[in-house]
Length: 194
Image (tube, rainbow, N blue to C red; front, top):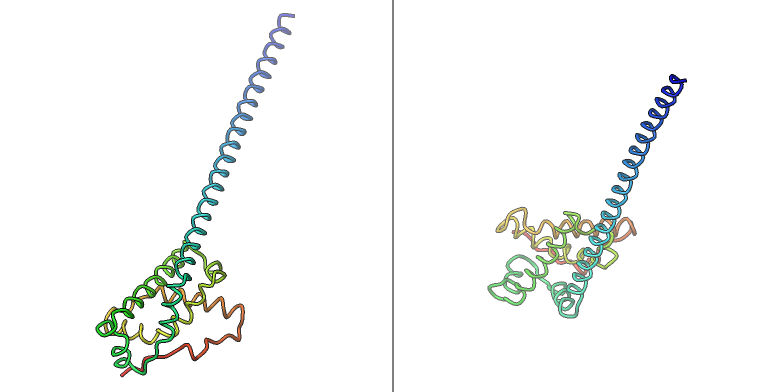
């Protein structure tokens, strides 16, 4: 009988140990699950905050680029006409037309910065397109010859590359949505190279 009691005690001890081990493992699994759920919720919160910041940034850019003054500047640039580099310089060069030179720099660098943000994936192309940022296509096409000349003679190949990137991405989406689209030729005035 003593052996039976000892055997039962051993069985109870093993069962107790197994139960304790099971409870410990179960607690560990539950703790990890809660930690993972907590991390997932924190990540979701960070993602929502990041998306909110992106939308605020895009809203800010939209308000900035499409307000009355900026729209006037865009139209002023789009209405520029020139026949060659010398004609451009006489009419719009910063030595003769400081106002126009300042507008060009401001507008071009703004689009270049937005293109940089797109390249770095701080914003996405589809959202930009839906917010009418595809207007950059017209501006890029109009000034491509001028910018190419500036790259070749003054500023190097990396001058306004993100402005160009933005315009190309917007054009890519435009052509995907409407494969027959062509930039209206009356918007474009190319600089003839000497």
